[in-house]
Image (cartoon, rainbow, N blue to C red; front, side, top):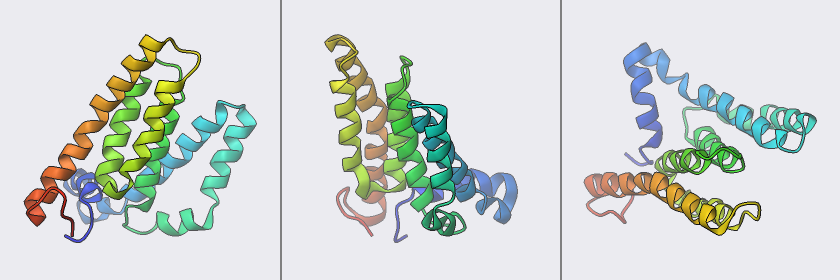
Length: 167
């Protein structure tokens, strides 16, 4: 393999369920998730902003081009946008959902792991939350995101001989 294993991991259940044609549904499903997550984030500022955000993503030429390619660009963007949509929410489980989306995004594109830092900082610096809530949220986010980085390290060690070596 010459690319991260996240897309292959996402495609495996679709191969089992739908055979080879099922593989080509993975990226469009992630595309729908990206449009929905953009709508969700934009909606925090109003329904029109949410609709405009979703339309801008859905009509973007690079998005439309990548939507038909079995590559990890759209899935990675969808997972990172899902993490942002989750962490900007108000529900108590938001840091965990954001962490799980981050873990999946890191599996999809390990080179983008630094994007986890601003999400963690957002949790720590939310002014409407108490210091205790912020620390607790950041710890839950880190605990949910860590398995993605650990899985990448194990996979790279297995394929390339070292956790820090890639294809």
